[in-house]
Length: 87
Image (cartoon, rainbow, N blue to C red; front, side, top):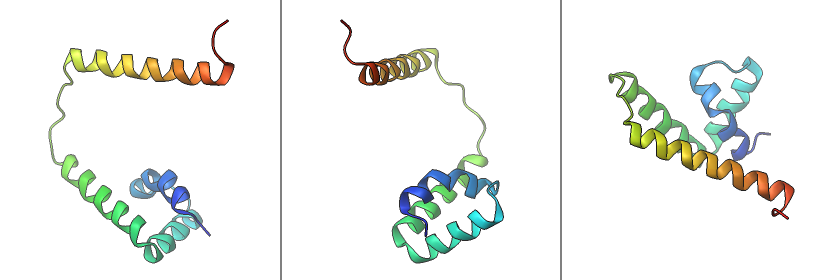
């Protein structure tokens, strides 16, 4: 039996129809039985469909730099959490 966490981990492949048939059936069963995951699935599917019809937009360089800095900061924090504080 799939959990909601399992469903969320697989939702992208489910929406892209790239997961194996057995997993796809399990995911379909889960969203039929779980109203919360059904809402997540339905909302995500509708959002993807809206964005499929739009033209790609360039991300401003300042935003790119802020995103990269945030990613680097998070990576460093994870690294420090795994190894402990610097000595």
